[in-house]
Structure formats: structure tokens, C-alpha cells
Length: 99
Image (tube, rainbow, N blue to C red; front, side, top):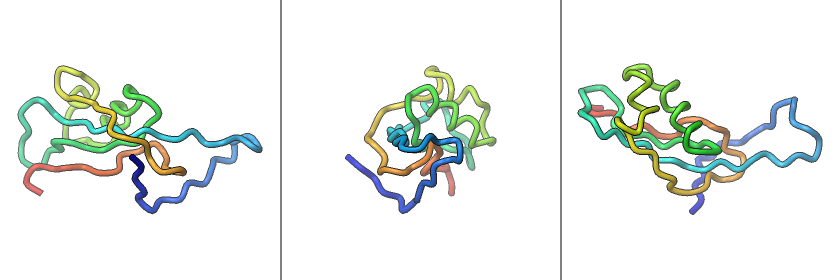
């Protein structure tokens, strides 16, 4: 399954000539604890692996403590597909309660 969010990726200047950028996986992170108004209940993250996906989620959403996204006790992190070529590691979609 591939998703294309219309984002172009320009490799960083440190990329070696001829190097192919790594293709990102897509992860669905879903909270398993109670979600308050104006807090994220789920997000889709592009990342190489599961643990970096959790870190990206925690760093991107300041409304909740980092542990909400980094701890398996508070959220799930499921591989849902592969991002289109050129998608950089980042949060692609956030579901916010009440928004």
C-alpha cells in the first residue's frame, strides 16, 4: 500500500552522490488511554522503524506528555504501509479530539 501526500523530498546536502534515500514506513499511533478535549487521539507517522515513529510523534505534539506516544502502555504503534518515494520522516496526519 502506497500513499502520496504530494510532498517532494530534496535529499540533504550530506547525501552521498548516487545514494538512494531510504523509503519510509507508515505507522498508525493510537492512544489507548483517555483522551481529553483538544488532545491527539491518533496520528500517522512516516518513519524508518517503530521506535523512531514513536519519538517523532512525541516531539511533534506538545499537548500530551511524551510518554503518551513513546510508551506501549499508553499507545499502540502499527505498521500500516509504505510511504511514497521521497516522503521524509514526520507526522503526516493527526486526529484531535473535539477538533
